[in-house]
Image (cartoon, rainbow, N blue to C red; front, side, top):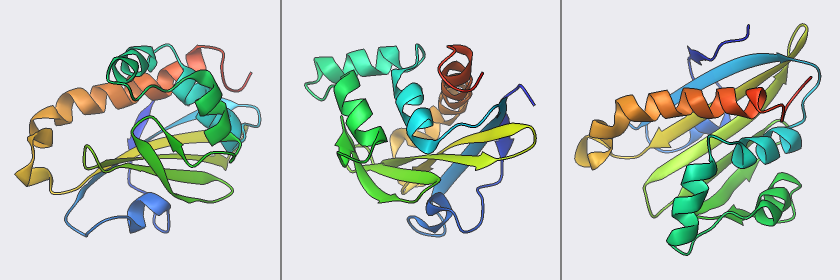
Amino acid sequence: MRKVTAIAVPEGSLLAAFGGPDDYRDAFCREVPGAVSLEQFIERFYSSAAFGPERLVLRLLGRGAPKADISALAHGVADRIAVWELVERRESEILLESKDTGTASWLAVEPCEPGTRLMFGSWVGRLGQSGWRFMLRPHILYSRVLLRSARDSGAVGN
């Protein structure tokens, strides 16, 4: 599978367990050749070309995500990056929450034949009572672009 596909939020995942039952969650995946660790995926995802504009905006707001911070988060040395704070981390997944925006981001890796399944998902609390419901379509497109960019930039896998 080379394209990014919407998937059901995996049962038992950090994303599935986070927040309330009526909160919004989505998940996307892409299978890539070769073995990819969670650390590699985190580092490449937040350093990707597609995430660059968001990093710039965050920097202008004084909440930047420099590559050193990305690397520290990826390798478990830090528990926050820009506006996101670590909620929980397992060997193959990580969940980060932004209390400022009422959102969370989830990254996970899973071995598959013939390589690795990269997964990215989001959580939004109280979707119906926030401005986020108007942002869902752009958010879904952006999520797909982010996941594709982490791979296409040559950042992950072979």
